[in-house]
Image 1: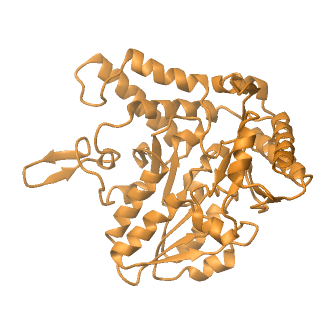
Image 2 (image 1 turned 90 degrees about the vertical axis):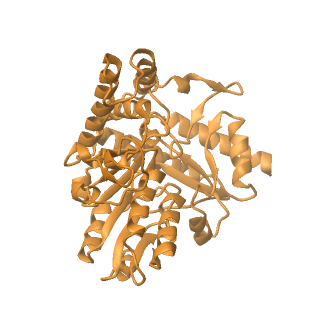
Image 3 (image 1 turned 30 degrees about the horizontal axis):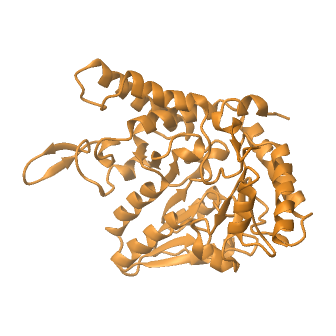
Length: 406
């Protein structure tokens, strides 16, 4: 079976060697953001140190070098997700802006009687933009239900699709439960109804190769910081024929071909959807993160994360009063739970005192928490640099928390 050299991997992440309150850091908040390998940090420092400049149209060497790195990053990302063309990769500030870009364009096309379908497991970023688009246009937002284990009710999903469905949006992976959705199957069903499909890939992109052409969707959105890259940079991938005609949302410099005092003509892709000075360093850093990540054996990556999840699931059963929230058959390394006698915020605080970093709350999925009947959860989320020993430390910490809260 393929394997990862976890020790060598960890040595590439400077933050993992630090201590918190005198304890070795055990970082288990990877669904919120991943840590950054030294090569990504170096790429940012090198850009700012050697060729800091605005991109495109610069009549000097620094601008040329910055442009080459910036556009080279677009090529790397396009290859990683198997885009049909580099022009299909639009830089954004992250998943949230990517989804809003599509939602704002769609709102201009929707009308009363049209329908948009999302699921009960959405992050607010893949719910609120569609709410607002439907409110502005008079369209109807429909919610596909989930089962109690956090998996999507496929038959109920099918029943919501009809000739009025204009777009279907769903997560590749649930951020709060770890559920992996059958993207290609859901996309095929939506296509049969004639609907566009957007996939929120924020939690999917760091768990292995994403092939947007094989998935069959029309849009795929993700953030750089979820895949070992910088914050403030993200991607909207879309089919070229759609993006070329999609209503522009933000206007200004760079995204125009020509301007008069009366009107403007938009630029070609990808620039027509990239107004203003971009996050140049962020794009370069994301390109380096994707280059670094894509060199790993993705079969080994998946196997390691599943081993972490399996061990954590088994140990969870040994703690009386601990209940897992989200037990779907197909999951990534996300362990969401509640514990009798302890509020998630208290659990997180007491674990932090032991050097263990997790996330607590509703995870920007408040309607989902209401559906599941919990105010929030404690969430441990694993990445490629986590170890089986760290899973042991987590549960040793939880036993101490349980005693402190007794």
